[in-house]
Length: 263
Image (cartoon, rainbow, N blue to C red; front, side):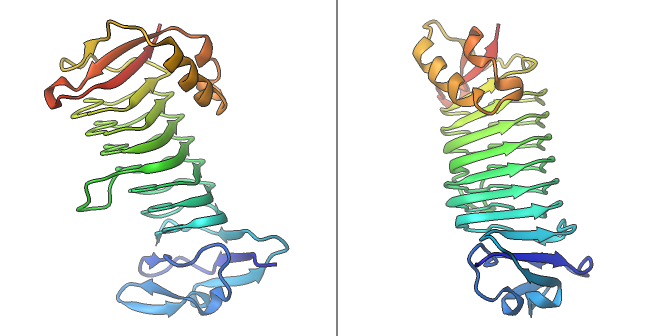
């Protein structure tokens, strides 16, 4: 048995930095975490209870707790409520499940594993750390709610599925990877996009003047991509049976990315 349940005693006065609190941790109560400008034992803020399984479970409103799952490289972590900034950032393996909303920079520079968000996320999901050049690099991010602005900015690899709406500049400066959107899209989708694919399973986005219709069809590519997305259900379930229209760009950046809408 190596699992723990960590129940937040009360909302912290200052934001908590939970980096290093990961599945498999030996003594969470004594683990030092950041609280404002000082380090404090995690047991000062959380009641710690052993579990019969090997999961690490947070309970309570963790919207003032940042970097949950930071650099996670295995195991299972559950947040039974909302999470703060940087949830799943730099994650390499394992499964992180947030049963609520998460704030900004979710899955930024994520390289592997699976991250499920039952609620909505803020700005710059699957994007870069501030000052960095590379965004999400692998793994799968599934968001059941909506996403803020600049979702997938500089994304390099991996899959992002949004069941709700997306804000402005979806897939901006995207280098590679796949984004699938079930809801409505804000303005300037694919701005500065170089490669990669954005699938609009819901309403088509506004016309982008720097994207042009694709002349050649890509049936094999579409079937492989559609089947992979369809396993997530919802608005993506019938993608393999749908015909598509592709637009290529962003030509203003010399890009060859795909904006894919359904016919």
